[in-house]
Amino acid sequence: MPTKSKFNFEYTYLNLPEEFYERVSPERFSAPEFALFNTKLAQELQLPENTKHYADLIFGQPQKKHSFFAQAYAGYQFGHFNQLGDGRAIMLGEHQTIDGNRFDLQLKGSGKTKFSRRGDGKATLKSMLREYVMSEAMYALDVPTSRSLALIKTGEPVYRQSLHEGAAIIRIMQCHVRIGTFEYATHLVSKDATHALLDYTINRLYPELAQAKNKPIAFFETVMQNQIELVAKWMKLGFIHGVMNTDNVAISAETFDYGPCAFMNTYDPKTVFSSIDHNGRYAYGNQPQILKWNLVRLAESLIPLIDEDKDTSIEIAMASIQKFDALWNKTYYGSMLLKLGIAKNERQYFPLVDEFLKLLQTQQLDFTNSFAALVDEKIDLNKNFTENENFITWQNKWKNTIEETSSFEYAKQLMKANNPQVIPRNHLVEESLNLAVEGDFSLFDELLEQMKSTYSYTEDKPEKFTAPPKPKFDKSYQTFCGT
Image 1 (tube, rainbow, N blue to C red):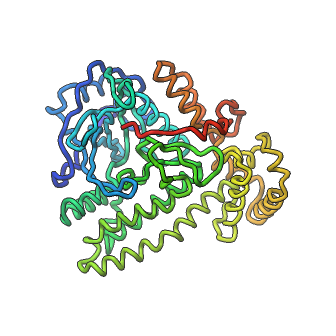
Image 2: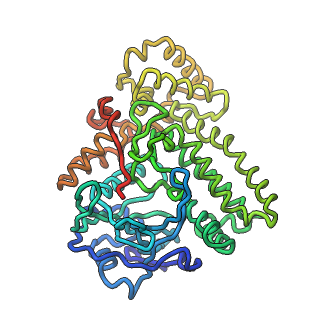
């Protein structure tokens, strides 16, 4: 049995064909310093709570005791297929808890691997701070996500557009297998490799599918449903991932790789903050269709396994893909109706969502605060909005629907549980990161503390954390990958 608060590592991924990984150790940092450590997360996962254990693990003699490795994968980046891999990340191990749950511990910013291409394999302090604050904020928002266990200052400079302080982060996920891993297996290795990867992933993440009549299709449809639920949660919160390439889509349906991500303030489906998304491919409103596009790529990777006859495989896969739109609508609208306090997920109520969003877009109102104002009358909405004839008509229809389906008391509880008061506002995230880089973590810590009670509605939140930025900020704001 695993022992509490110790590393309990296995390396089951290394049972796959050797094309799937490279054994590698992290680079030696000149003056490593643990700047942040998530003690509560370590306790939850029965991991060591003393940073000395992690320093020994990473900077000791790992090759004698551990089998660190970087994963190989491929991916469609902005629609173009590329062979990729962990160019700046190394798997430290698969930690198993006493109750049998398994989590990857990955060191990101660990230096070059054979997959680094022209990169240095390192990361800036600001980009790793962003990953830390965004992943922990998403966890507080009840979104499946990678978690941040520790942030390490490397003591070395990192060169991007200018000189930056270097850092690495210890990231935790259920599993780092991606759609891009399946693309790599099918297109660049072999059918046998894809089969081995499918069996491995089912055994690790979805063991209930082991006896399915057609495992590849059962697997695909499970992944599709889980991904739909994940992206619907993003949409519900105004979250924009910013780089939904297939190598950034985890089969475990966890949000990860917090580079050019951001939260939408003023409601506009065309909102883009990523500096590299010049054509708005990954804009807020495009995320559902991009998800479908990505899932089609996964289906293509599974074609050789679905049936011995290729045409039959394609036909079966297409039948599954055609379920996407109905599943998306049911999941998305069900999620958005909860924001309006309506528990009945029925098509007749879907227009209430679209009409409210259209009103927000027309009036250029804040997405988060507008929903929160339906919960808490103390939150002011623009009088031009509340006195608008179209809003009054919608409001009457909304209230009538609540009376038909439940009660206002029940509706308010639903809305409180589904409408956060605080999100990681882009201007606050930037300010907190800039201060933290200089050694001042006060705003960084305060933002994370506010996120912990974002659904509580038990006390007034400081206006600093609920007020959107000035429109001028959003017009010029950009986020970056950090590579």
